[in-house]
Length: 80
Image (cartoon, rainbow, N blue to C red; front, top):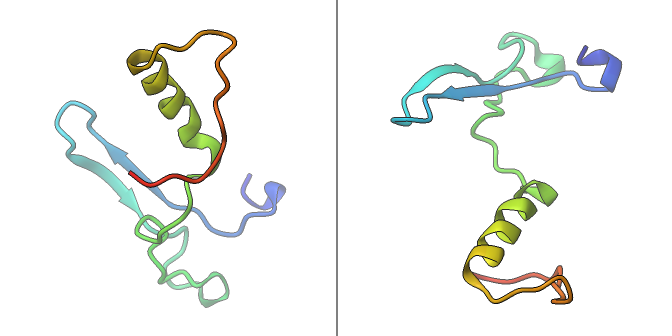
C-alpha cells in the first residue's frame, strides 16, 4: 500500500484519548533499512500541519466569534 502511493516509510503513534497514554509507537517501517533512513524516528520529526488544522481553527472561530455566512476568514500567517 505504501509503495502504491509513492511512499517508502511510515510511522504511527496510538494514544488513549481518555488519559494520553501511548498504547503503540512505531517510528519507522524498518529500523535497519538505511535506504529509507530507517533509524530516523518519523513520529518525532517536526512537520507542518498543513491544512489539517483548519477545521479546528474554524470550529474555534465559530464558537468564540460573532461570525455569519458572509464573514470573510482570511488564510494568512498569524502568531499565537
